[in-house]
Structure formats: C-alpha cells, structure tokens
Image (cartoon, rainbow over all chains, first blue to last red; front, side, top):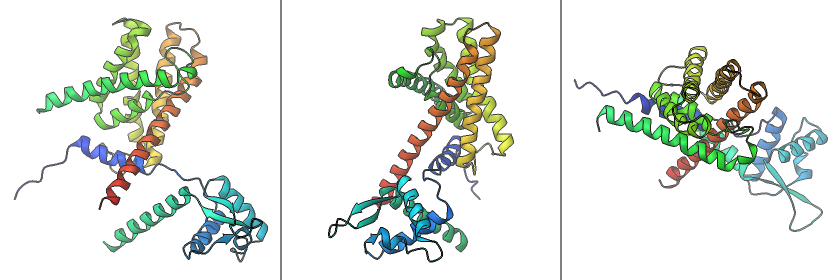
Length: 121
Length: 182
C-alpha cells in the first residue's frame, strides 16, 4: 500500500488560517426581533412585491407596530435596509434590501448548505 | 527547490514584506505617529501574528531580520539597542502564540482555529509586544514609555484588525470569482 504523503504543515496552517479569517464577523449584531423583521422582509422581497413601511409594521403579529418600527430604524442604522420613495406615490416609503443584506442572506444560505451536507454524511 | 533554499526564501520574503509594510504604514499613517516607532495604526503588527502562526520560529527570524532593517534609521546599524528591539519584536508574537495556543487549545496545525481565537491571539500578540518593549525601554531609562504604551497597543490591535479584514475581503472576493467562473 502506498503511504499517503502528508501535506506540508505550512499549507495546512494556511488553509486553517484562511478559514478562520473568512469567518471573521462582518455583519452587525441583530437582536431576535430585528432578525425576525429582516426575515419577514426577505420573505416578501422574494415574491417581488414592494414593501412599504406600513406593511412592514404589520409583519410581526405578536409585536406592536411601534416595536417593529423601532427595529426598522435599527436595521437601517446597521445598513441592512434602505428607505426609498415609492415611484407611484412620494408619500409612501418603500423598504429595500441593501447589498449588505443580500450578502447576509447569501452567507446564511451557505451556512445552511454546509449544515445540510454535514448532516447528510 | 530544496528545503533549505525554500526556508531561506521564506525568511527573506518575510523580512522584505515587513520592511514594505512598515514603509507603507509610515506613508499612509504618517499623521498618526506617536513617535518614530509608535503609531496609532501599525499594520505590520498583523504580520507578526500571521507569519509566526504560519512559519513558527522561521517566521520570527524573518521578522527579526526585517526589524533590524527598519531599525537602522531609529537605532542605528547593528547597535545593541537595535538587536534587542528586533529580538523583542520577533519574540513577542512567538510567546503570545505559544501561550495562546495552549490556553485556547489550538493544535500546531491550527486545525479548527476560529475567528474569535484568531482575534484573541491578535490581542495577546499586541499585549505581549507592548509589555516587552515597554519593559525594556523603562529599564533602559527611555522617556515617555508609559505614555507610549496605550498608542502602541491600540496601534497593534488596529493594524491587525485592518489587515485581517482586508485579507477577509480578498478571500471572499476570490471565493466569489471561483464560484462565478464555474
């Protein structure tokens, strides 16, 4: 039987270090309610429907509109959502995801994929 | 290339990278210098941590050589002070990594090292560097040692974070390019 050659220690260290660097925290911390609001918004965005601030305030059935509104402010401060005027009615404010939010969802998806693959083994 | 030659090349590259990053730091953050050797942002601090994690004592030798070169304008060529400071600069991350690996139970291969552990090692490297340099300069009657401790620590931590996050951005970009090209 051919004895497998061990990869160099430096290469192993580099790979492990690179993985650690990749997983450096890059997203702002979200509290549980902010996460729920963001996930609720994501579900609506995925259908291609515009979300107004008023609509978003109704997303949390067990949270008061003012609580949700506060969380929307938090998400905006953390750079995950942006508010823009509706093209049809300038009095209406629409909530749109930022690039950071899209990266956040992508990373979550990758983590879920990894977890699913690990579970399948 | 035989092992000796590749080690020699690695030491030389480490020394060269140290000198390059040291000069870049001086150019970019000139306004943030506390003294000629202390800055509120010190990018080379990240190199101390990373080369020792990757190459151990050989990385430290490269750091020592690089620091001897950058010390010339401050302490002179091959002066006792220059040698001591270079030795402390190289030894600090070695001590921090050795203690940190034992405390955080990180294997020599760095298998399973987490981002949190990496950040802790960065903090320990900064703290060790400040302690060793500060102690030496205090014992040798250096002026302004205590005052320089805080900017030196902050400079090392800030520099390490900047470089690590820059490396993260590059790795994420490389991953994205690799994924998109499939």
